[in-house]
Length: 439
Ligand code: ASP
Image 1: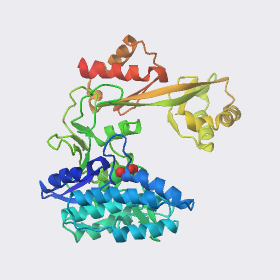
Image 2: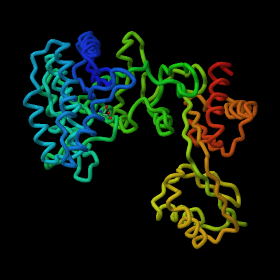
Image 3: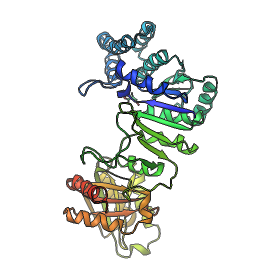
Image 4: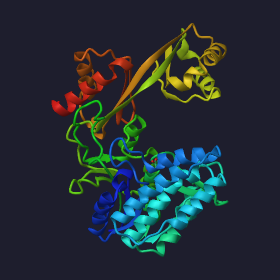
């Protein structure tokens, strides 16, 4: 069994956390490739090393004195090194970083040093080889990932290493300039490594025992999800569930490698398995509920709209020309509604309205803001009768007015639009009917 194990920042925030991680890795010989994040928070009011680096570099960029900030970052690593009684010196690494900061090496370079240094500490602690991600994770010059070159570079480098540490979050372009993914991007590194070494499993270790059916900030102690498909997870993460970076799914998905979300602080918990497909039925018909606030709707009415060929295309073109992506598009015979992100839309509102007017000469356009979308996701919904009925009767009992309904043809999800102010009540009502009442 060959495994790639990625550890998040809270799993590596202190020497004590490193020791837990060391135990986990040594417990299985197959845990061969380790992808660490930068040290995260040790307690809730603490600052993540990545954020300290952003702050420190902001000063360097302005030509201000950053020595105190860099010393604080250094102290975070020294505390870990001393706690683990390692004979590792970061003197040289820190003088290079200081010099590079003075020479304005860039924000992405600065942020990447958190993972780079933690990778060095982790490699020394485990006695594994250190593979600098700048040499194996390749970005295009426009900042996007060069997936195929990365796969080749990683496969070649790791073929030679039975055990290795590959820091998360960053890589470099062909000129050697360091680039990072967006925040939380070490998840992507782990997934890329798993693909390149053809791992049997990608374990993603964090501080929760897997994905939960819904957001714990809305429902107290929601039940965990044992098993979920990539497609279900993608629907949920798109709608705001945030256990894993959105882009981390693609590399392993294409190779059919399962992801196991695990808890460093409770390694005995099985966590959540994310898989390509499964016969295992979800206990509650639905797999998860997620949602987001802050949408607006643009409803266009025109008599005989349905007979006007190209009507929809012309309307959508106006959104495209204004660089606005749309989320959903429920329609009636003579109406169509476009749901968009409020913030994206606000800037272009009047231009879009004029554009639609010119393009299709509607009878009426109406706008509505402050909408929330809720996705109820579940592979089991396809074969269960009355799922939508249950959702809507639960919402009616909770006195939530449903503004929009959209069921994807895959029957994997039902999207419900409600007012922002009804969002939490609606999520709780749906959770209660399926999970607590098991209806
Ligand atoms: N350290 C980076 C962040 O805080 C990347 C990561 O942890 O995945 O976003």
